[in-house]
Length: 221
Length: 205
Image (cartoon, rainbow over all chains, first blue to last red; front, side, top):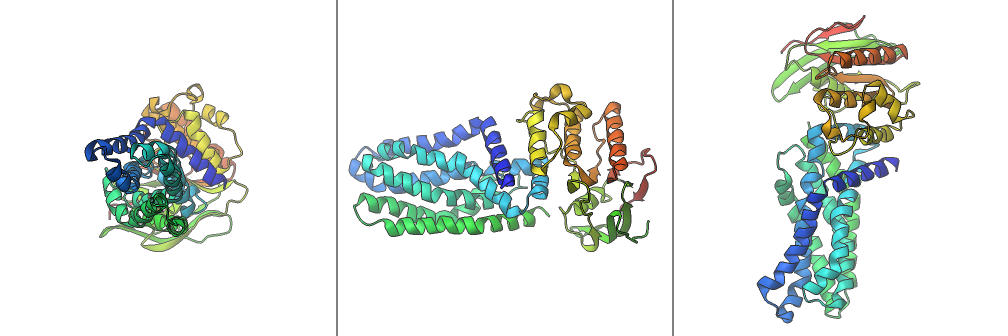
């Protein structure tokens, strides 16, 4: 536990010292959502129908933007060797990295959900379902993304490659996250969709640390 | 080459270690024993596998053959500390923050400030590490080894970028470590003066 807390604190400190990169990610989320009504047109009918899917797709892409920050800098300056030597187990290191990544890229999207919901014409009733769905689903994005980042740790400018590897794995999150929001908006029972979304995140919590650990060992030899 | 006999007091016992990178064999059948309080100096030309040997001993690289027994931690806080080519310094953190992080990970009993004084960074503690010179960065990396309180130090060209005062610090700390019963494996590109050290020379294979 000391290890997890120490590493997460260090990650957050490093993210905050390079806050410009982070603001870029948050602004991508905000601007992409603000642009959508401009390009689609202000018709609330169309807008509110595509809003849940659009919000999720933008959140997914924004979360992939910062994958290069997860392992590549530590690999370059030699810190990754020592993190692995000090970690009680490598999966715990992956978990710490994912948690820190989620705190700076997943959680802010949850907090920006009210803005997104209103900008996309979902009205106030869309705020709560979108925030909940993002809260349940985005941890899976960070966990899967961290595995992709581990796979591309030694690759120069590996962020795009990581995103390409990761995106297919995240499609279930996208589908069920979107369905959870849109079914709620239609007034139907969205419980099953939220359950599947939650199950997906729990499965990622259980599996991604081991996948990431195997990835790190494979690419660094 | 020293024979691997291996008593209980030996910090490190290595038997028949071989390393291949790609198709090329870097070294094969390397055996040695480093007893407590001893220092093994590994020399050899560029590309002879000095760094790979150290990475294997640190557990960061799989050997293609052979075995090694890393030490129990004994009276020390940890078993192994490893210093690679890269300094593992975050330029966005201050000197103090850099060392504090590794100290907390290592569960170090020592406090950070005296260690930074010892390596000559006492006046730079609150400076961003990005402002340090190459030699000062190496000193900061060295301070990480000191605070870890490990029984076996694996140092890959620790004197790189160090000035003569820095080298003196390194030598003093190695002597202090050995006096406390610790041991070390140190690589160097050329044979350097090192009091009563064992020597292992790797050739380009």
